[in-house]
Image (tube, rainbow over all chains, first blue to last red; front, side):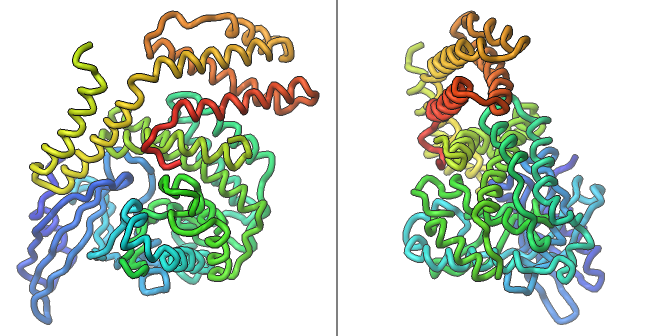
Length: 342
Length: 147
């Protein structure tokens, strides 16, 4: 593998812009924290048919091993499905599956720049002054995702569509298998949660919808006026029960230690009310409880996998060790709370 | 060990974040240094307590197994009884962790069995298991964790 350079990226982009001349890339820098893909930002400049063009772009490249193993074409398609809709996402430009170009598959997108994404920043002024507004936007946008028709937005063509009564089983099977394969030490709390979930399945959704898969504070771009400008990190997007996303967004681990305001923003019931109004769906309490507990299993699957990848040496990015240490016990505690045992 | 390992690790972590990181040439490297600092901070917290918490937890699970052995069926009962009477070979963290893994794997098996049973004795046992699992998260809790 050779280094990822500005010249290599420019060479690739030149093949995608046949009418362009003087294709130039500079200011290439990697963004820290990309746990599932290596993420880089850079500036592109070229001479087009209508004159000089300058753009700030993002390149997301598969790593050797990742915190979340996913298909980049699914992520690319999910972004593209919502571009220009009420769900703000960056514009997707090129998807490249051939590793010959930059060593691993990757995609290139427009950068949405100038906004904050840190959960910790959100908990302090000036952003915390607009927590109510941010919450309104956050769960309204999630409601828009929930009400999207997978066929109409083109995602049923690239994502498997489970039968409504199999949504829960497919997700639970998937994440339990990951825990089975990757756990480095026994997980009695999450195993108890899995047994409970299998014994008490939720009602099927009225219809299968788009699930972002990682919809939480930390995965959107916001400003100091309480507006959200970009929903990011669609690498776990799939079709399923919309309550899955709501449950993940409500998880106690995403309160970030402040108090029990969900996402660090508003009380749980307020978040649910916003989502119900925006989605046109009802969050049946028993079903939502199932999906909230399931998301603890999913969270443990992610942290356990990251611990395994780091431990095996497959990926020694600090974020993997940090995430595992920081989140495993918190997720166990979230599961205990949901099971009434904390 | 002198200087105190906790002081050394904490100081090195602080220097990594506050002295070395600003001189790194990219935001990515600075961010990585920040993550290493935060991770080392968790190590500082864990260093002093890890043997104690593992020994305490192993003893607590063995007490549960002593209570469960007369209730559990055949083969499980025999294994629980053996594990209840075993003791940690030494106080190295690796030894204690290996025993902890064995004990917690058996605890999963025991609880899965207990959930299928009726009767007050097994219900009390299951409540005891849950109480121990809750205590285990308190033992493992780190000040920097989100919940």
